[in-house]
Length: 255
Image (cartoon, rainbow, N blue to C red; front, side, top):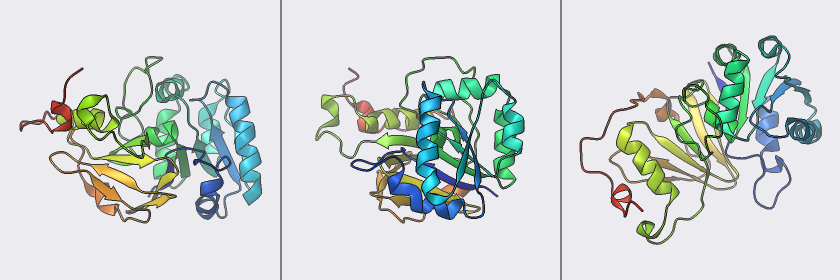
């Protein structure tokens, strides 16, 4: 059963790196002091790893750097926990595939390895990376990700939308377009929020709330502490075009 913490981002507004989440990270990593940090989404993995080491040293966790040029599968097999950092989701997926480590990582997490992911690392836990905000700077070969949860995440979801979505491109509209083509819930995670998954239980947390999008339904605000365990039991139907009238957001001026 999966034991996971999926963070919208590593740094909440006005706070130091991981400051907002150190408590819940310490809770998840209790009894696990050897963490493998996978920074393959980053353009500067060495600096990112240094920041991670400095932050998690505060809770007594030793961070090991995941070197993509070495045997990443062996490193994953020997880890007590894995933290997949943020950056570009397409780059992350391509590099993990090139290292032939994607299946090893997914299998270990489902077998009980603690998984933490921030931004791109949270996207990686989804069935696909189709709801990332990232530019496709590389071709990962497929959008298919780990599938540790059966729904999608949209990290860095903006705290507010323009008063009239027809006036400009909005995140809400892009998610609505995704739902036109896919019957899969999308959890919009604002800055400073997280999703905690433990077996069949899931709940939101953080400094503010999340927003849940589902096909043919109004978006739902979820305050921190909301139980979203029901999402873990829903089927994901990709490439299932909505036969009904498109949502209001997707009917807006196409630009």
